Image (cartoon, rainbow, N blue to C red; front, side, top):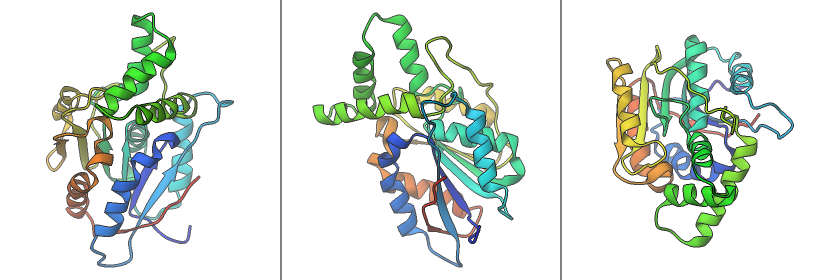
Length: 250
């Protein structure tokens, strides 16, 4: 690898990439560059022929990072953040800090867990439940935006390494990490609600941060990229010099 990176943004849900763009753009444009530093984007897409496996995603992430000569700051939203969390617990020497967006203390409780619970409780079609979840994620918005998100949710069911299924909703033990940790959520998120974010308090160390965006629901970092970005930059800059952005895919 020709360039050492400092910050790695994780993307394990390709259909949700557009929700990350504004935040990544803000971060790339507002970091004061003291010396050459890089923010990179790591992307994972599971094919429909592969078994759903968080471990495979974590292994591929390690293959990508093992050539790095210094620990990196990991960050990710929802399932992407969950992969970062598992990686940070498994390879703490490779992670300088961890920033999680919309990841509750019950870390596996993502939108897919919500979806499968609803499917088991209510005799509704798959499409109707997806539409209900999409409206919950977006709030009052135009019909075509809800339908676009429904399509993205369908893709995510097939291409994200989320461990849940109709047969079992997986639980992962609640615990913290060795490195500095930042938890971000939204006060209006109905998927990862404020209470599930607040439960992280029991796992936080001195220097860790927990922050709730006043609005924005599940994709608060898309609707309020500047506000979220300032919080994340403040956290990173308290630990390491600042950075510039490139995009890398695997």
